[in-house]
Amino acid sequence: MAKADRSIDPRLLRCAKEEFLRRGFEKASLKEICEQAQVTTGALYKRYTGKEELFCAVVESCVADLQGILDQKTQQSPAQMSDGELIRAWDMDESYMLWWFQFLYERHDDFTLLLRCSEGTRYMYFEHDWVQQMTDATYAFYEEAYRRGLATVRISEAEMHVLLSAFWTTIYEPFIHDFTWEQILEHNRIVCRLFHWNEVLGFKET
Image (tube, rainbow, N blue to C red):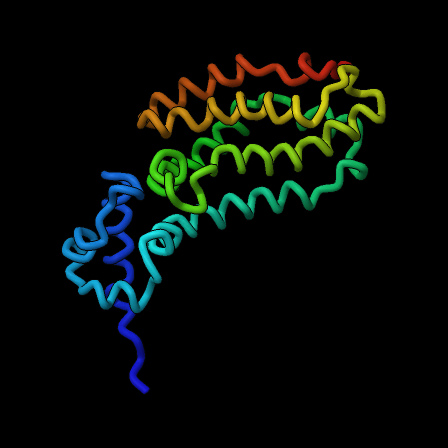
């Protein structure tokens, strides 16, 4: 049995990414993608059931990388952390925040697709869904800190979601507005000055 020709796959995905970035998912043309990739529509449909599956294939690696970070976060049990570790988990450290921005900047186009080009796909609520996943993971750290008396301000999980929505918006927006890396460096410093989680949650000083 002849092996399927996979040599066109990278070209097809690259042209699909360019079309989705240029026009968004709903206005993107499979015909245009095929023409740019120099493949037939039949070749495309042998690989993907339609436009949404093609879009998902383009962003698949970025989604998997983000999920990997979330999995790492949820594997750490707050109950096993020291008081100092729980408090430091809320520090707005510039180097840590810059790591996040660099991680996302290295996946710039794919992350941008998720944020502003995914209307009509399963990722159309990516921004909200990601914040909800982060809330689920983060709230456990807060609850443990509150249980120990380290955090003194009581907030609900819904309020945590609102706060994290505001926080993650400051991360989303530079990609939505095509910030350069130099602009992101300055933005990172501003974000770290803007959010004072230790004060918001009433953490006691160690």
